[in-house]
Length: 322
Image 1: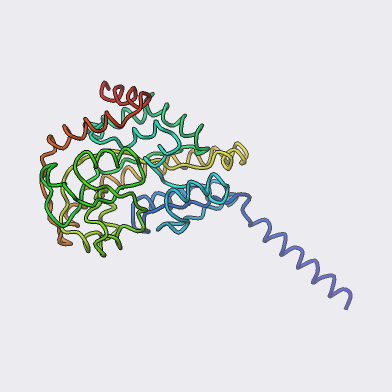
Image 2: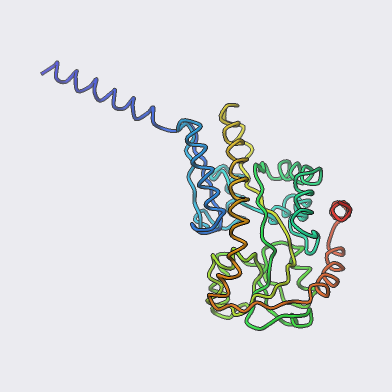
């Protein structure tokens, strides 16, 4: 009987030891706003696979799409409090780091290559340094976003067509100021609330890249995609600085290397996705409207310059001179 008890105890201890060996040393809670099929989530899953494999399970990456951890701003706050670890975020960072406003300035970039020069050069370094210093978040990868387009239930071809339009915008002062100057009535609102607000008629329009217009099913509540191309922007994958630095150097390197691979993977997905999005939205019943972009740009640029601080103006001029 005693021998059987000892044997059972030894087996139990061995089992517990085995289970302990399988437990991760670190957990990364990675929350974002896109749905499971969005290329950002697919990129996050690639990051998860690489990190868990390369760390031999010492890091457990848990992904929470669809704002499961809250809105973009909520997740940023959670990372700062230590209850979440990673997210995908963009121009909202300017609420802490003013230079991050450059990530989504209306009509600031001529094309994708112009934007890449800024992000991967000294301008990007300057923006990232302020983000890290002011927010405690470390940018570890960046994704290009498709140009932001305006959706509505009436065609918008020129700035005067915006008069009185109740337009959802992110909680970004520059966006609010610019759309207000263009004649719309901008309303900051969490992304998760937009569909219902459009459905109920609380707002008339919203603006986002084609990828989010599709993934949020805005074709069900909006008739037109007005091709304003008003913002070419990028978005960062960020991790809490405290969390990253809590890991030994070998695991930090695995995370950063995986982030580089995630960025390359997402870039490939993005190029493929842009080719099919317009057709998919047309097939879903949306009408694409060609817009007088020059008229929008001219009016928007004046509003943008008036909204920028001296610090932001310097970066804006540096971008124009690239």
